[in-house]
Amino acid sequence: MSYDALLINTSTIYTITNDKWGARSEVVIPLVKCRVMFGNKVVRNFRGEEVRSSAKIFYKANANINPEDHIDVDGSGKKRAVLKILKPQDSIAIHHIEVYVE
Image 1 (cartoon, rainbow, N blue to C red):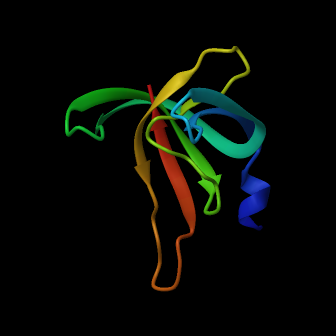
Image 2: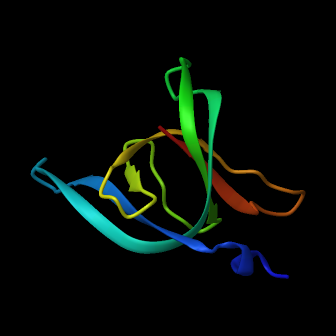
């Protein structure tokens, strides 16, 4: 079974970009293949604070996820903040990306 076969969900990623004049705009990346596992877990966020995560999302290693992004995992339109990003790797390369969201 390939890793792609395990990515049975889709998510929408909302990323903030700045143009050359400093104006912020939101870019929507719809229907990114992923695997969502709902469940509460206490994790340390980017500021070192302990926070409660409500879901862990698995993406392919080439997914471009940033700490400032928001993710809609269930199609409800609720933008969940990214709390933590992990990039597990073996001795050769990064295998996948794990994203914890609120």
